[in-house]
Length: 534
Image (cartoon, rainbow, N blue to C red; front, side):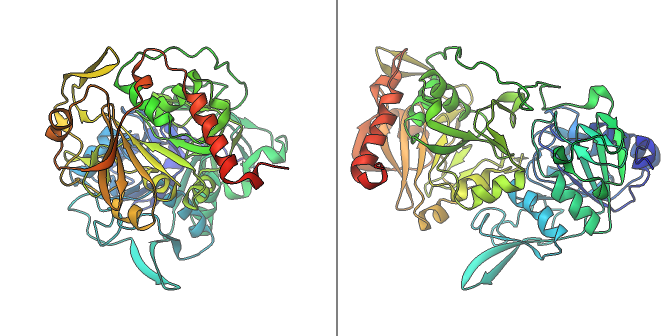
């Protein structure tokens, strides 16, 4: 008996008030054909209404795809998600109070499906302590319409933890490449494995239904069993996607490099112009450690991978993405989340298990606001909520965190003249402020765990020392009072060992990174010779 069904029929099975879970990032894994049909049905019949929508990663294309299809008054009662910046209409509805909204860590939501499937009480973790998801701060609540506390502080074995409680999942919306008529699902052309398996298990063990959207339908029994990521026993209905709806990422419909089918040449990287992005990326790359596992955030930190490639040190580290790619080169822009030439792919919740346990040696991320205690905001500013995504999971337990970004924002223009940095036009807004609008990263918590934290800008480097943001390096040509202190909302501590940033990174050509990293290997060998001998 085939499980293939028309999309109009399957969306009619989703009842009012249902809790709907999705496994996707951007457009990867997102069943767009089903979402379009749900929106069409709601606009025609006002059903299904009052939905609770739950997803770990941001879903959309920065336009009208993804969860933007749910941005209609009455369609959604409650949103629980890691990020909503990729769906502007949904983000606006949430921040305006058109539905309840909870912003929780991406990795924790991905892990929660597994706990729901196993009928366990929820995810018990330290991820989120002292940040805005801690109920003693904001409890993850996004707007005034949101009042219920859904995150709890508990004591376990004499330690403080957060509990993210389980709930029932009525509908799981997942996506794959091919399903046979029984529902066995492969993801061979997808750019990520995501968390479709534990989500399907969560829905089935909640008494709910699982709907899978696919590109192709095969005869039952013709798929290789080890290529099946979700077994058909967990899938109730199959919908064949419209070709125009099936996108690997927000910017690419299909690239065989993203699914691991081919490897692409990466030796001929384009040169980067000598601007603030290159200066920041070079200085940040100096923090790399040979043999380290690294996560790079979206935006400015992506330049670290480009510099590593240009400097020929890509073979000395392993880049990873939070949705499961290990090795290779993370893609950027509208292809964020994808990777070129990955060595392996794991499921998202598994990757976050590794991250949460301290598996990352280095994390390079952006920062919208920084305060004197080293608190960082990336999730909510100027009244606009985009969400934390995997930021909290990535930063809280990485062995070292490096924040990369310009010193001011909005129109900053710089030049390098004679090896010295010149500010041609200052940015319109300060990023180093007296108080952050929302605590996405707790400097106080980082200080309590003795986590090394750096803040790298084009003109200065700061370090979190004893819980205080401390100026440790200044760019050549920069005046401390006029170019730094005058554009901060607070007076930072100045290190007694204040240094000048490496003048070599302010030259058109650098070529010094490999030597820096090789020197770290030498120092490590001297410090622990027994680890470098057979």
